[in-house]
Length: 98
Image (cartoon, rainbow, N blue to C red):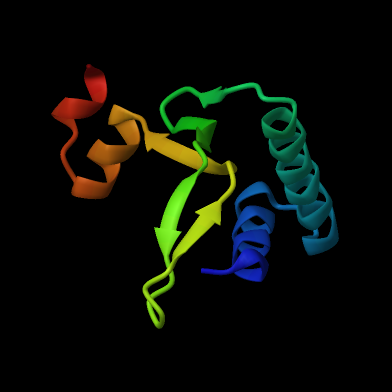
């Protein structure tokens, strides 16, 4: 599913127009981005947690020449699924209660 498919799904589940669903989804995505940009962790109960991880600077190798290359510090977003989401995906309901 892509963003357009998600907008259609939200619109049909809520009985609203696709333009309204698009506005809601864009607002949610913008809020998630703002939260992560500020360095906060975002936890959504029964869904999962988004967090920003920092990878330390280091040395890598150029695969063609074999010479070392300096790689700077980078940040990336990590997501850890909640037990309820894992259980829903696997089709196992008893794990969702924990």
